[in-house]
Length: 631
Image (cartoon, rainbow, N blue to C red; front, side, top):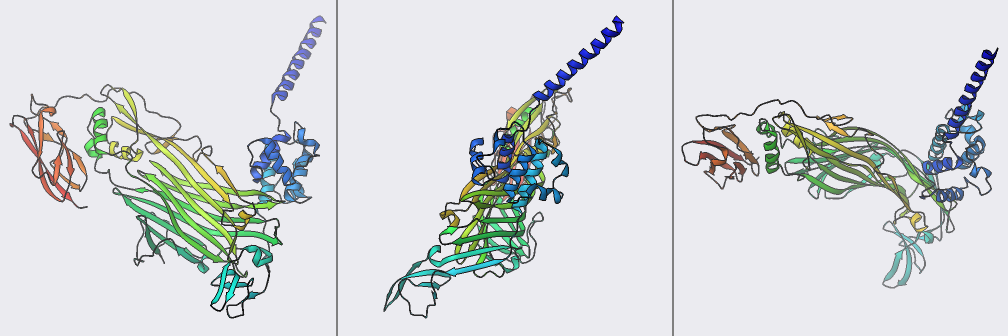
């Protein structure tokens, strides 16, 4: 009896401990509070741009999503009721959350939850924001002028409104010699201006203004890696870059390229499926709530193509690692093959269907910085814009990225776009974006000695260059560390716009170095991503013996070089009792090819020269025939 009682007490006590443990576990688990939810809502919607939660809360109040009397603001856990209330306010629809559920975008089971966890709330926020960002408008154009427009043939008086040479003018003075005019302000032209529409741009109807004089070489054929089609190319040159563009019905393709130190630096940009959505209402010096969104797809491809170091790796193949490292720096100029450019490409003006005097203006800029051998192709699906409400502004951003990349050097590429809504010779609103990718691949040489011990050395020589040169040398291994991240800077309503003059302008830095392109994968070995460096010490792989010969043995006795190229003479064997330090190098034609005291040949001008390699006593000699070509 006592034993049974003792067992029951033990079981009860164990259950009590388990209950306490579970309670403690739940108590220690982080809960999703109303404050957490509102912070996430403000960021995803583009409403809250302040640094602190209190700033974001104030902005949500400005938009009417949060009200001062909301009792839920201090709740430790987000309730379903408050989630539903704020979503309805955000969507400006009493059935807001019910609408999302009815459309199958949110699971109906959420109605059965008194408190909402982060995962469920994040889904609701995303769908609600997608809903308000994806709104569309019917075609509408209404314009009422402040006064009757005069033609140039009419009798003019001071104060008249005149449309001449594509511009609205106010007549300030009239005399027998003619009239004096000044550009009109928007308010002097319209008392009421209402514009709205959603449509797909037809680029075949566009007017293209290139930023440079077009070349007559329209038969220019682009490199095989370009995205640009071969048909109907328009070609011009600026800042040493060759720029081509072509229009198709859905968009524009652009290709730029430049020769730099034997390399071809290139950039491609394709913009298509451009779809503007806008609503802009102005009445009696008062701008009503405004909406402006541009949706488009873009593909960017940047990089370098080069075979500059292809003939070097054989020369480096049999060197010990220490000689490899010292000789490398005398031949390869670190960080020399770099280009940085901001290239304005063109301005594209497309009319808005059935809306008189209104058009969309697209300015295209390509920013490029590459080094070594980098190929990076990005596909982006974009929706950018803004909305105003009650005198306040929020931004619209929906960017998805896909990429296909070969990363063997460093790269920075950005596409700069300015998409403007213009009407009646006035720029109403615009969105300017500077988006793309930035980063660098830092290079490390791992050098093995004859005992298999490894030493590591960081270098600023491009990863691809070292990979190419060292690929057949077993005592040299190359690694790269990648730091690539998305960037997106967004300017809403630049100083050129009417919206800016009304105070609706803002700059947003949306993406930064926290948005890594490749996530946690950042280390490259042999051109592939690995989780961490695998280079380690190893057993001795070879023994270095002095090679004795009855003559001076060289690795090559004839070389063809381009002007400016260098070639290192390598001695493979020497007669007994002689060393490389005692060799003398000389050139038969030093104006064509000169040679240094350590055997480094530099090609100067086209022609041929004979490089003599001799011992100090003159008993032994050997020759390298050098032919210098123009390319």
